[in-house]
Image (cartoon, rainbow, N blue to C red):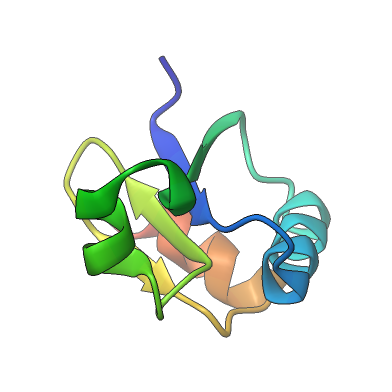
Length: 78
């Protein structure tokens, strides 16, 4: 199971941009979760997506973010 989750929506151009940013940042493997598939996730993340979540400690990085912000998020101590 990946330590990172990217919460996203179907047909979301910001989510597509976030995927490109994660690639540019050299982000390790992550799980994509579509909030459209869950009423609970829709309520929590519906207007915030894309959101990168660290499963280990629960930290979240809300959009907008760039490659430098993602690298800082990944390097941040627990």
